Image 1 (cartoon, one colour):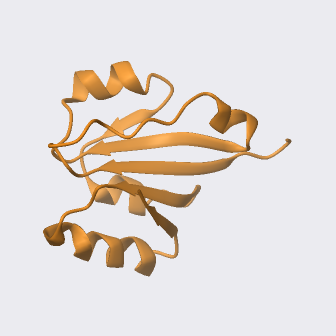
Image 2 (cartoon, rainbow, N blue to C red; image 1 turned 45 degrees about the vertical axis):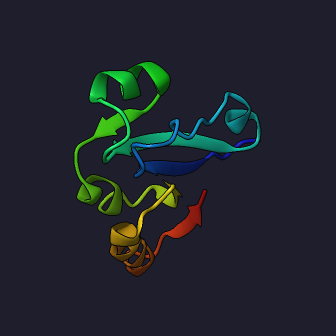
Length: 97
């Protein structure tokens, strides 16, 4: 595949194991560009789990990145629902897992 789709991951739920994207994502045309760990894992854990990705501190880092087409939101709680709207309003696709 010549073109990779840049994606971002937002981890929301501290009570579950972090969502895992494996290396087959690259084979399938996806590149995990940015990760935001809201409550789930520490920055050092995120860097260890996603060494190929930039670990960001805010939603704006994802929303303002025009190269990101898809945002995966892992285990959102009720209070995280507004962030889904923000992602959609920014013109990006969203997948909830």
